[in-house]
Length: 436
Image 1 (cartoon, rainbow, N blue to C red):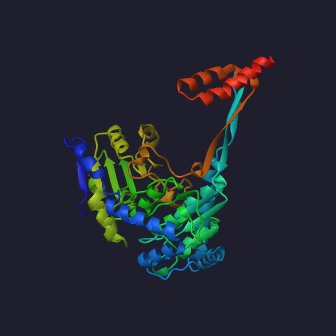
Image 2 (image 1 turned 180 degrees about the horizontal axis):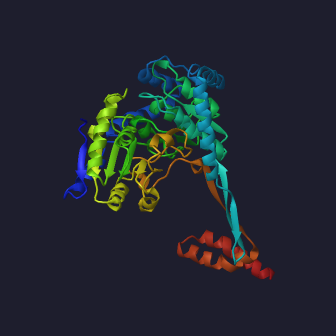
Image 3 (image 1 turned 60 degrees about the vertical axis):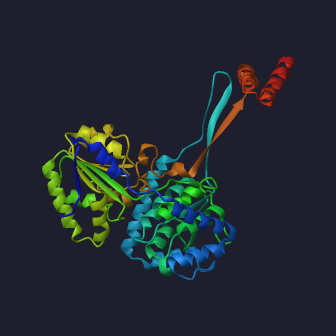
């Protein structure tokens, strides 16, 4: 039986134990920060030469500026090589992701107030975005779709993909996903060196306005360090799932519990239930599923190191626990999820009821699967169209409007010691008063 931590919400030290459980080692230490800083500096100074040196060192293949390029022809060839079922599934996913994200498109607006000013907001897309597609432990074509499709919906002109290719091997499904998602350019590089190339540009890879997409701790550290040179979506940590359960099929629930654990040894799965007997049954099925998973070693390490089964008195207490966890994914596997939903304040994505496992959201439901991790759902949101659009304030004023409010603005400028600010208004007010 998997050795999964069991907690009772009524234990005197419950919150201490919960805090310890949530303190996963997801941050990067000084040694990693220093290593990444050196990689970034080398790529910034030496461009393609440094990029290829680091790629050869970390990914083990003879990278050159010419052979790192993944063309649209390469993507199309991969699209042709994958199976009919692959193409059908990718097309379904693209269509559903696009349909969902079209509801997020922001539009220009304005209004005229009672002093005669017309104020508004103009929405414009980013020009160029870099999409980091993770590789290594697994290939993630779904990550291509979830990042590229909302960027297209937002109106981004150029989408560039970088993807690590250990030993120089490219994944056809990833390239096929890039083709169907209309990624214009691709490069077979990854790691901190690829982030550096996207941020600073090289002779081969153009600099972008924003880098999106998850990666390992080196990628996360690199994104954190280049922020300001370009934008980033978020600092993504290991994946996680929380579940609130008051009923259901324990076999299903055991599988759901493992759905994120198989990603990474540092992933986290937490199930909170009001039924102690059900917790026992779910634990049995977790072990049963582990026995047949191809990624058993990864999933077992995850649940035994970072997982927990928690007994709560009632759903209100369970919701309070989940709001502390602020999980990336939350399944409300309860009899009446709609009644419980208003109690949930912090979660990246919420799956309602027994028939919506997290995996449905990973691929074809439509909402984005790039979600805030490591309790950042307390203050951040899923990736979406809004991450690829900018807002500009638009301000119009009639002469009468300046006469109505200009004096107050000039007064505040003087109070801040900014005489030239005040002068810009006072000169206009003076001339307008003379004209009248």
